[in-house]
Length: 484
Ligand code: GLN
Image: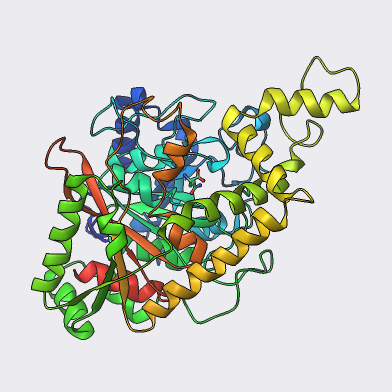
């Protein structure tokens, strides 16, 4: 059962118990251990929760909205009393003193976490090859990466080890692994979900996101996590992100609710950027599936138009200058004194800083701290950081202009399918370039959804397409995609 409403129906009707459901997930985790998606499994916690849920159902209690929802948690979100390490040695043995707002809201709504998932260290990477726990394998082809940085999150859903995964997306970390594993992945509008308790990477880019099997589950989980939070000033007070009406339609998964969704919506306007589809870096099979996707939109009665976007070449440099700058500042707190790992060999304070950080961070994390420190240094600040800020503004304005008259922009999730292990590890720039289609939504602070668009004609790997929409139109975007 790969949808919350079906699970809840089965539990209510007594066709299944929550305990049986959890045992099913635990079996999947066991069977797929070799894929390395989970770093830790909270078996006792989740079985106790299942027993409580079954007892409440048997007693005829009013059930919370997310009862029966078993989730996995990326190793960069805090859950009080549980270990969290951002898959880095520097946080070895660190236990979260409090829960992230998103985590607490899910628990309060009746959901439960089954375990902690592997990821690229501090969310820095596109393949999950950069974790202190070793790589995660893609279940579609274990010779290939699952994507990153939320690779474990994607594989936890792909293998049926939980209903959905909670991850984070700074430049595609939810959408790209979802695309590489044939799933749905959603990054909400920047500020929609509080970042309190999410280990910071690039604070003006970071968002909590969901990987799931359908748009309905994403909508229900996102609606619970979203909303203002006193602990995060970038999460403002607003109308609900997803309206009650949309949630109501989402909660029914029958054909009539889908028809109601699409007929209420009528034809929509989709735009695609020619430069993105014509890019020489785009794999031919992905391109073909992209055009087929656009054709399907047309034959469903929607308007599809080409537009031009001449800032494609600026996207990756702007993203990697700004995120490394922010990361170099955010990661300064890991000093060998306050959190996790401390070098044994250090003889004084300065050596403690230097040796703990040298031994605790991976090469990729160090590369980014160095790059970020460089672009922020006086003398280079204006040339790099200042310029990148200007580029970000220009990019966002250009995209916002297009979205004034279009409902969504369509693009691939990534230029190719999941690659084989080691293929891009020696060349960081090649790895960075693979993020070209996903980082745009984070540069713009806009919501974006990855959805499965079929299998690659040659290698059979999953291919994802992406829909990006105007800020705070998350509910419309999800409703639209569910109706497609
Ligand atoms: N691959 C991108 C990076 O390495 C995005 C990662 C993320 O979204 N956390 O920065």
